[in-house]
Length: 73
Image: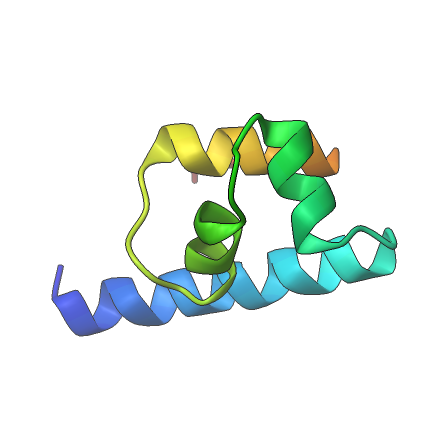
């Protein structure tokens, strides 16, 4: 996969997660605190489509109570 494709996919995911967080009335600070992070940097990276690891994404999802379904076709 090209880096351009991966960046585009991360941006789509980040936009979706930011919208969901805002709908729930959570600030970036609230999410960071719930995820056990001392700073909001991981939240910003995820929502801006920057590079992050799966553990960070899972912590973000748990902190925001957002569930993703993975379907294999």
